[in-house]
Length: 247
Image (cartoon, rainbow, N blue to C red):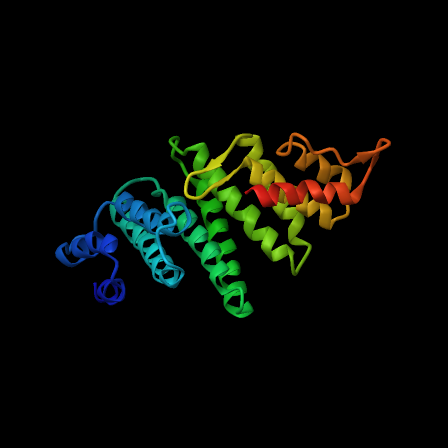
């Protein structure tokens, strides 16, 4: 309880006070879905609703991580007497996404940024292990896709410094699109178009321009990088720039 209160004192925004007051008034841990939802609310305040100043981002990412970590304790409490494991993958997905986006706040500090990205991929891998081993028949496709999307993006960023990660990134995104070709991430403005765009960028780095074109043409209707039936690299890059500028 002390660690909850220490975080609470740091957070001054009124939107957090309803969460904070319940921590101080309840000795028993709440239903795990409460903490999952509060974690995503903090995450979305930065990324989906865009209601926060930049200097508040760190506090809200800390809050999101705290909520998702508490949800693990809540799952342990709720499912300790049952024959099957609880849905830990929901908490790990939230932790992974919070770490991945938190890393973007440290573009001028490579050590912290890379550390958070490495922690993020471990969290998504934990979500994967839990999903694979789960005995529940109520797992949503969205949970699988959110996990694969996290592995896709994390592997892409790690691939910038170590290109061996790019193959993993392509594999994870292929799994996602096989589940839902028109996937939409609920907690930020990301969807299948962003996936094809980033897959295309990987193929550009691999200098596989035909496959890069196959990806970008899915999201740019008027992409035509051919001159006399020959693929023009500069026009292909223009297609990617067009998508980047429009989103």
